Image 1 (cartoon, helix red, strand yellow):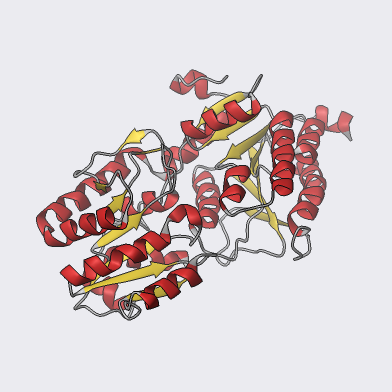
Image 2: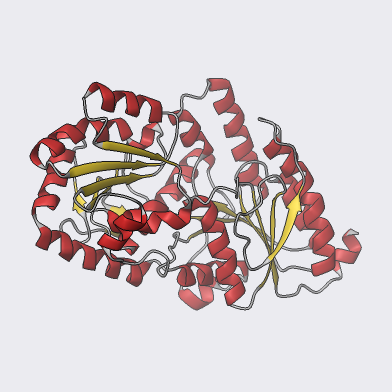
Length: 402
């Protein structure tokens, strides 16, 4: 089979592999569909490999290959990653792709071997560190060591790495010494047609909310890095000064129950609505219905967020502690309202100032949208990824690998 693969001429096809629960219409799963759909619109022949147990609710436009696994904890992902190379190799012999693009940092050796047999490059996207994510959740030291070993092995077997931020490159350089790797930074994008400014009154009505209220909204995961308890602690001051204020907490996670209990203890249970997980298609309405949106991240220094991109693309008025998105600086008071010291008092003061100053809030709405249109669209992102896959990024855009 290896001789046959080496003698084949690659076609224009691209294989995309991932392991996500694609039934959930969340930002990180819709991201996958948006990328492959953008490639398909460009005329690319795309084959997407997904876990058979986690099919898309809304299928993408490209060809989809379900890879079998079992829905058992600790087994489902690694069984999938063991079987995936077999499917990549089988379909690779038939379709002769020019590259495999993998949104996975778990266990790459099998896919790397399949790519070597097919004579094509493996490009791995790094959108976060498993070590950081699990450490924040209090994972045991033994599991952290295992994850470090798997991540290190995956890094070693691929030559082409695509990072979503320069900060991630620095983290991985320090941890894994990325010697002899082709490193590229390609920021995430956002669908500017789905996430666009809309009428607040109609959005409130579509969500079944009261038109008499001003909504302060968080959309995301209730994990420690999102600082959701701090939002609840800030709410009483906002509600005291703005009797029409209501808080919407959209999402789920390990700290949701604590936040619900905290709201009850502060006697604001009737002013904080815990909405649970919502389909991704509903998120634009939540953003457009909101007077203020909140995006906080613990230990922030630099980086980016799909949720922040969606907020700004829809013209949301955001309070955040970040200073830039994927290395592109945000201007305080122009694109959003920044708080540097993240405390309940500073957050409450920031929210209150935006609720009280409609003219300033409207200026931020307009500038936020313009910022996204200038820097972050899926068409731009998809094009840069294809440039990398084709090995033409240096020649066409003046980028550099290292």
